[in-house]
Length: 355
Ligand code: ZN
Image (tube, rainbow, N blue to C red):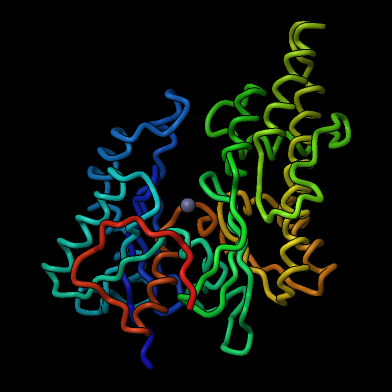
């Protein structure tokens, strides 16, 4: 079967992204980041995000076409088989910009629409192939079930993939998502916003055993994630130090960054191990912004190997953060299954549903 060429759009949070994919191959994946706009507010401001999406979306679409055209000797609407768009979960007024644009374009160019769950995009992001067709992993019928671990600013999910489109959520967060915890600790340490990436950098200089932080839900039979206890523990440790000595030293700051990262990764490892004991799969798909940290990937890979499993993650940096190429990849499977829609449903989907 011919691989479908899909124009994909994601405006789920604060990045405006448009991609062109051909089957699992990424021909273009443009991400226009709004970090600079939200920085001074210390978080994503929904209204600013919506305006920025609306201002940028047309030029990002044009850029995606131009980039994809380099591989295809020019690409036009005639070549596009479908338009895919993220319909949730995410920031409602931000999502709306992408959904409205997709609907308008579908009507204008008479193309079918595909509604994609943002988390399904992250889940399948390791399957994305570069323009030459090379992917970190490919999955065929006999490989199921496989497991997905999604670690980002909004999610910490363990998913059992029974087949493409049949997902079972087996573990999720009880409070903060792991990426959220990274950002909050980063703020406590004075790294600004969004500080998670800075924290990962600073942690390299620190001693991960300097502070003894708690091990959340250890030996707890729930397959769940919790970062609020860790966060509180860091908060009070820092407060205590400040009371004793005033300003923290540079060494204490990097030591805390390293100790927190160590504790966060250990928690992810504990729960991955528990999941693998319950569901002994061979393949684990890793996705989400936190997976961009080499230390996180190395830790999870080590745990997986102890259970005879292998962890796979996306081939490029942009595929970890919010991006439209992962939406195009997920849409490509939906296209092959004939799952196109006339209208984008407004019920925000949960990434579950098996049967
Ligand atoms: Zn995301």
